[in-house]
Length: 262
Image 1 (cartoon, helix red, strand yellow):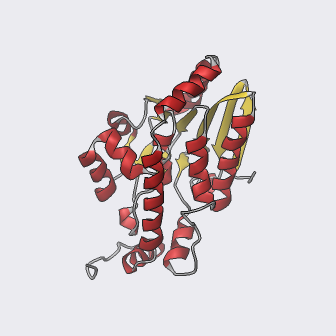
Image 2 (cartoon, one colour):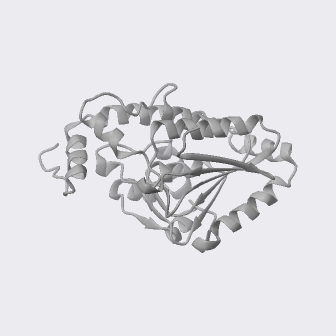
Image 3 (tube, helix red, strand yellow):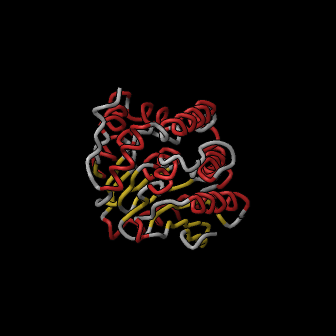
């Protein structure tokens, strides 16, 4: 377990907290593995019936650490492999395999995977100060975590395309309207409210809860195929000249110029 991920278990509730507030809880490879390990171990722990995933400070997570993408765009190796047993695929596999319900408490900024992880959670609650963004196209890459399948199904094709292609940030109210979050709470009350909901869920018949989740998620083959296809595309896109321009512009804190690309 990395110091950036906290795993607390009490009263049948596991709380996984992303704890890298100086970097807006941006995720490193070892953090993906730590979250995956915590979720996996909870499946075998009779004293865990519900998992709550949240962040520290004013961010849920700013997504994958941009340094990994910059390393890939610079041609210095695949710093964030998207296939096999590498950290990010292991993280997604743990989410897909989880038999016990997972609740996301979006306490603040949610970028990239901080948004695409949410459809893999069973309940999602957000602080009224939460802000969401999926800037994949702006970085010259594509969405991940089967969001290209799950989000059109959730929001409708045109709304999903608007979020993917225009990549404008949106607030908690819009996330609620889209169906991405179940409810919004004042920031200072979010965790109290979420833990009360988790306690209600933990008090229910555990095998019936698991069986219900299994039935709802029974048709996951398309999700797994989408994850693989998205991963292969990211591997290619992140090394393209346009992605290198996007990453370079990000480092130099200037607008990117894509005018010379077809």
